[in-house]
Image 1 (cartoon, helix red, strand yellow):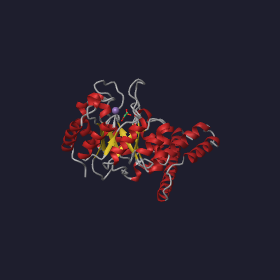
Image 2 (cartoon, rainbow, N blue to C red; image 1 turned 180 degrees about the horizontal axis):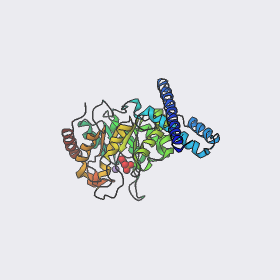
Image 3 (cartoon, rainbow, N blue to C red; image 1 turned 90 degrees about the vertical axis):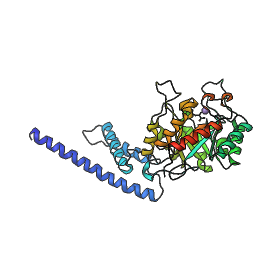
Image 4 (cartoon, protein in one colour; image 1 turned 180 degrees about the vertical axis):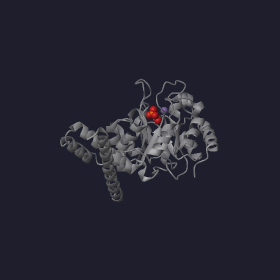
Length: 355
Ligand code: PEP
Ligand code: MN
C-alpha cells in the first residue's frame, strides 16, 4: 500500500473511533436520564475503576496497558461531558439539574440575601446588639465565629460552645438563620446541633475527612453547608471539594468565594470574581461572596459587594461589630451596624436585584 493510502486508512479508522465514542456518549446520556428519574447518583467511581482496570489488563496489542487505561479514561470523561454540557464531570453539583437549589433562603428566584454578623461572637450583649440591628434592616442571616481558625496560636481562638449557643439564640429569637464554622471533626456535632449553616473555613476547603463529617452531620439534621474557597485553591478544586459534600449525602451546599492569595498587598487577599462567574456556569449551587476577608479593610466593601452581586452572587457576607476597633478578631475589616446599613443601601441602589 502506498503511504497516501495508508494515511487515508488511518483517517478512516480515527473517524470510526470517534463515531464509536459518540455512540457510547449517547448511551451514557440515556443512562443519566434514567438515573435522574430514579434519583440515583449519576456517577459511580467503583464502576469506572473496574472498567479502567479491565482495559489495562486486556489491552489489545500493540497498545500498552497504560495506554489502554488512558484512552478509556479519556473516553469516559468525554462521554460524561456530553451529559453535562459544562465540561464538568462532578455530576452531583453540576449545572445539569438547573440552577440553583435554594438553601436557607439563598438561591435562584429568591430575594437578595445578606449574611452579616461579627467575626467572633464575643458576648451575649455583642451578638444581640448586632443581631437586633441587622434584623431591623431585614437581614435574614446572622454569622458569628465560635470556633475560630486563627493564624497565630496566641490570638483569640473563639469562645466555643458558649458562643455557638449565644449566636443560635440571637438568630432564632429574631427569625434569622445562623451561620458558624466547624473548624475540625471534634466540633462538627456541636456546630451542627446549633446552627442552620455549617461553614467550612477557607483553610479547610480541602480537608476531605472534615467535609465528609460535616456533610453527614448536616444531612442528618437538615442543615446547609457553606464551603469557603481556599486562598490557594483553584476553582475546579473548590468545586470538587463541594462534590465531596454532595457525595456524602448533603444536598444543601453554598459555595463561598473569599479571596485568593496573589502578589497584591493592598488588600488582604484578592477577591476573585471570576470564580463567581465560573461557578455559575459550572454548578447549580448558590454562591456567596465574603467581601470582608479579601478586603481586610472596611473602606472597600461597597464596591466589592456591588461587584459581587453584579457578577451573579446570590448572597454577600459582611462582618459587622458594634465597636470594630475593639473587636477581638479582624478589627480592621469589620463595620458598625450603622455603616453596614449605609453600605447595604448604597449597594442595593447601585445594583438592582435580578428578577
Ligand atoms: C470567617 O468567615 O470567620 C473566616 C475565618 O473566614 P476564612 O475561612 O475565609 O478565612
Ligand atoms: Mn473574620
